[in-house]
Length: 295
Image (cartoon, rainbow, N blue to C red; front, side, top):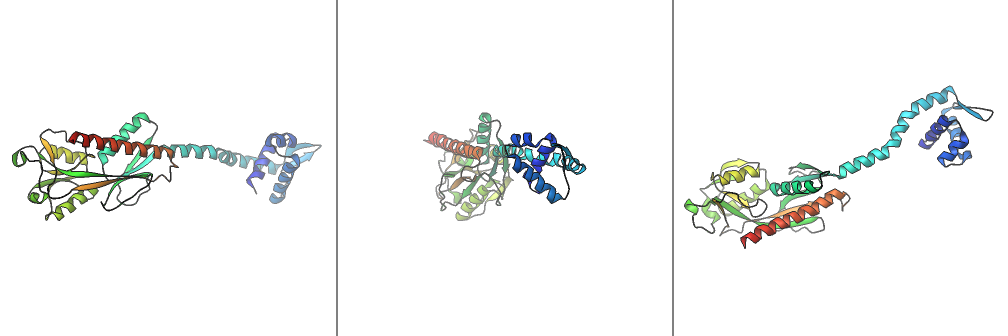
């Protein structure tokens, strides 16, 4: 049985008029009659009684009509349902954020104000996940290019109390901090791994006094003078506490490279591509503003 044959049968069964049905379906009447005849031969039963050019349903035809109405109605609605599903999926942007969480969150909030129908699904999974946009870090030696890639390098400072042993300092040697208590992100975070490697290059393993998976908590603890901590130049923004200052390192060129990558298959997912462009511009503006303040 072919779907077209079943659709033709239902149309004729509901009208009981072959000519009018052929006109409505925009098919030739002989072709419609032949399709019904093939269906009857395949099923091995007569579906219509043909008496004096009048059509009536047989008991088999009535049974088949009753059984076909629901599934054919479902099938006819599938194109619209799939289009609605595609529209909703296109308006949901899947983010995998492994770096610059606060910066990306700020960008999401700003974007949603102008595009309230857009939804975001955020994950923080270091394993390969299916996402539209990836925000991560790469090794300084890595180089990616293309329309769907943005790489930005930012310096990493040391956040310290503006006083005590750090009073009057304009820079600091990382190698001098072996006995300091560090406030750090959790060990699963990319930023933590980068900072740990710089400490190892300076000859020590950092003594971690406080550890959190939440960058906001780390920033608050540093601001509360609970210890010193690494602070990325622009993705974390300026420290809100005027009694905390950011010192560059004098003995290590401490940096990280942020990667923003659009995985939406050449722009097929239009909303994802639109947000990626917005995010890139948002990050560039944030970086320019911070660097401009330093100058």
